[in-house]
Image (tube, rainbow, N blue to C red; front, side, top):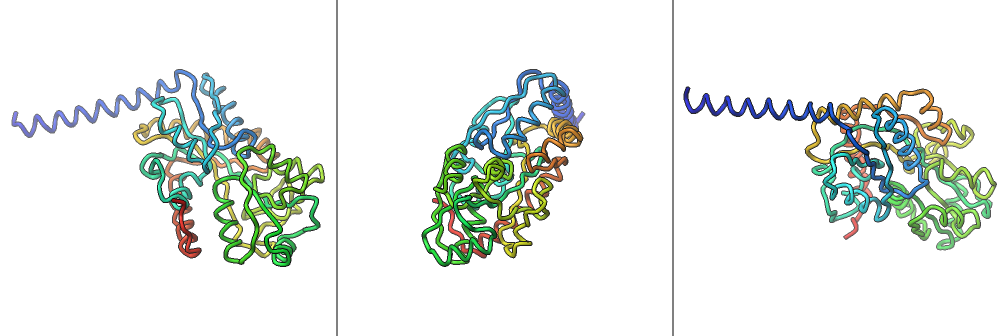
Length: 324
């Protein structure tokens, strides 16, 4: 046998062993607690779906599935914590912005999302809403813009991390509107300040804002999705309100680390899709202004690529300067 024949035979054997090992790992996974790192505060929109999916996946896998919140720095803290773990039973449960937007808004990240994160599958769509404190008489987006023009520098706003600061911030800049941004690490004080009028405008998941709306302490102006939310059918979309540039998606999904076996990735995606297609899960998500979003790894990756290109084009049009 020539040296070339022996070489290629050895390569073939190694490939076969690698393929067999990946399938064996997938068949044996999970064999202990699965941890989902969520780079958002407890109680936020994607945190709700994370806990809902964790509950059902735990039943399906026969192993505990726990959610660990690691908020801060627009999601960078949570993503970094995920990438720094050596545990193959830890996954990242995050909004798409950590993959599509952070490379645009931050000049230097401690990681490369495209290189280091592997999209596994989408889970749900969080409906983002624009609300105003009940202390103000503002009743539409047009009212808000007119008030901001009449009272420059008098209004302020806050939001969830990710898309809202980028999209809304860009809109305000282009429209030459002066609204001070007030950052919050936790939701509770932000919601309290919205209800008491210390925050004028709040852009966050619909599910997060609804308690203040239902109590009359806040008012919804629009939802940022393509279609009206079944939970609040009388509230217009931003496009219907005349401000299509404020459209924002809230796609949430699971990510693995570079090197995750394809078989394991597909196995997890299949399990998640089964949960997302469950009518009871769909109903629970709809009740808080979310929608189930089953899909494959390939579909999720394609969606993220399209969103990343779209946001890059928007940043270029805005002449956006990333954070140093």
